[in-house]
Image 1 (tube, rainbow, N blue to C red):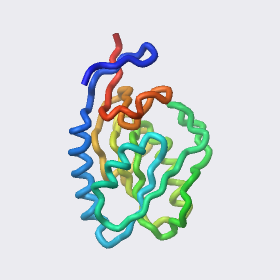
Image 2: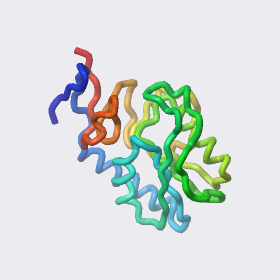
Image 3: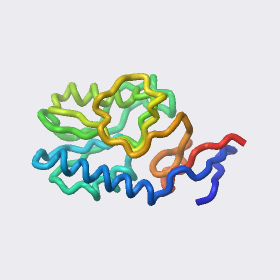
Length: 179
């Protein structure tokens, strides 16, 4: 892994794909145990979750379903403009739902997603996130059950995370360095 530059911002290697895969394997084991016999629905929040969700689902061996949602009016890091959850595409009443996120930082979008799913009458909601920034949270959550990595307040790209639409395709995660 080597450092990268995007639009005059510099990023250094942070979490290698091999580490990510190992952590996802462990999360998959936990999910298989907890959801045995329950037929959960995994709801991935686009766009950032796509790589994490794809690798995670390869480790989940219990019968389950998947759906993807998008937050309308979500704009960059300004999470004040969230208006609605779009794309669920199935009846979730009475279902056990696992929200799959790439990163939870302030928790504003997660709170909105959870409220929208609760309004649909789900049985339970658990959260599975690749990255969690605990020091950035604006809300208290007791159902973030599966966390790949806790990180500090830093700007990261790669493995689904982007900067101005770039770098989602990188297999590793990089963090910004100030030069």
